[in-house]
Length: 332
Image 1 (spheres, helix red, strand yellow):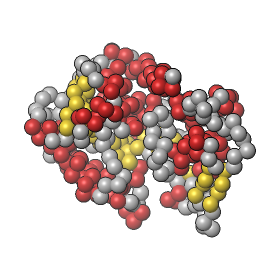
Image 2: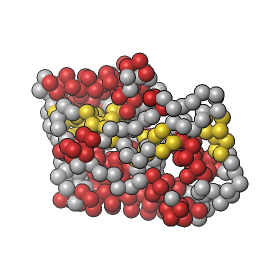
Image 3: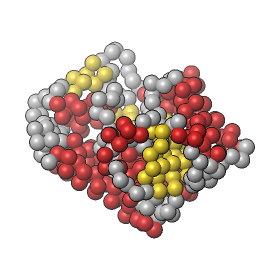
């Protein structure tokens, strides 16, 4: 029953994307798009959306067998081809667009660069028209504050830009910020996923620090719509940022998610280190001016609705957030 509930919730979201994009009459219909990282949180949203839009999708994975185990719904999909990374060196077939979104925040910078360059080499070999690299807001930080993850993203961005300048293919960068939605790994070490897992498991919610850091969270429906707009209509050589335009302090985010509980007596615990989070690095927010001006990106699902939909997806028959989630949207 839980799986049926989740599939229904997910299908409703995918249908929303299809309706906005015009269904099989979308500008991508009949095109072939290669996607790396297609079994990840955002990757599966991209792949499933493209398939519903009549796109022929090639998903590159470390292991084709593991990809099918993780995504059994792809078995027998006529417009889907699964390819291993080693296959990139052997195969050669027509590709219109490449979306490189495979990533691992644990990678060293040179690992991120090497992976990207392998994808770029394939795109060059098959004469892909356009490559979109899904980078990160971590690449936007000033150099002294970049993590290894951010450094790797910048290296991969620069490598793609050099190939664009050499005439290999059109290249665009889409820097993603913070997201919230179905299929996100609730075991990951991000505040929003930790808050959700605390509610679902009936544990106290813990805020590290003073909770004054500011983030914004984009729901995957808006992310996919923005990505497709950039893929089709973005200006080659540009770096776009994508995320929510609705900032929220981490402590306020915790309060909103904590309201999902049936047992409102479970507290939010703050582990304060004694230093304030109110600094430039504590604000992790996208600049949406360019993506709005160039491709008309507009956010349609805001934080309260994103929390509501995510809670409906994850709740189970014995979950402590059951029923309360249904009232959240009217209480925000």
